[in-house]
Image 1 (cartoon, rainbow, N blue to C red):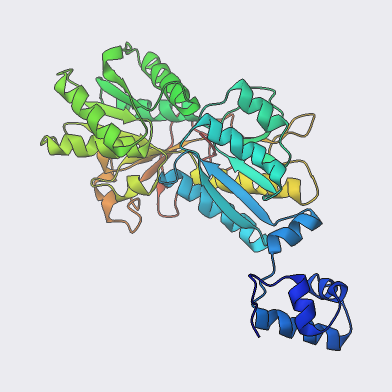
Image 2 (cartoon, rainbow, N blue to C red; image 1 turned 135 degrees about the vertical axis):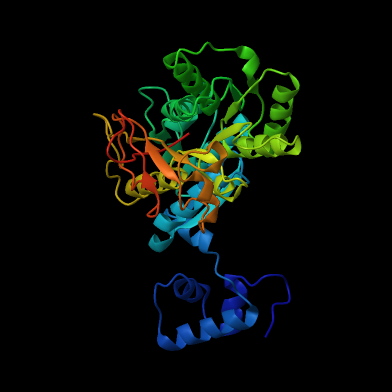
Length: 397
């Protein structure tokens, strides 16, 4: 038996089964019917090729069991780490995860937030790298629960998980200073973004603490990409500024800078030390492996997913410190993972590990952060600094 006029409908199934439309509706919606009616309807539906519209059914019941994760760049390994941990939380609970790359376009981000009104998704985790008044208005009036992975203004009525990028940048520059580097260049992403502004602030703070003047000629502002990092490094090296190290605002930039230096015959770290941020797979896979600031990308995804599920599964206060109104806020502190791109004890063998960090050393941030981390990889020894906390804490951009 086949359908002759397009996809099967309740009416065509009823005609094929010889039962009423009401009976078909009851069977297809799981409301029960006589065993013989159920058998006839299911047989007719199968023969006609009927496929249940689960989304339509869920909309009737008010839930889709679908969640959306919107990120600026689906190719950035930091966001891939988030996806893995979001799914680790939500998949066992029966949620499907929809991925959306916004390319950091404000209109696209706002459209995703507003699309919650369409009820095709139960909730949203979003990573905006620019936060405008329009963003805040959309986020606080969203038609479903939203968790932001990123920094929000104080008092914003939205659950959020953030990383302390300022302290992360301080760790990176302080490490280079401790190695005797004094001409420390900085390759940043767009300065009008939250991560760009925070990492620039940390760079300046660390230089000041070391008694080093800020030289604007040593800073290049570009895009967060491998190609941009290579172009920035070539620009700095062509300028003859005598740089001995470069701190990059993410691992993509750092990998590009390292490639550019090697293309010019420079040795890493002897001629140029390189530090990135995110401690992504790119850092571990680089040759030499890159020293990088771990901002807890995966953990941020996990915490954000837990917050969102808490809201969906009963409206309980979100995970984290929260405030008087029950808005969840978590700050995950950074840690520095030292590898071969800056040298140092044990770093020369860092490439030998299966994940490229077997001999890496973890330098945690100082105290004052919420959201405990599990710390360094099991095989990594933890280097302590005078103001370091006893455990690596962590989270967000």
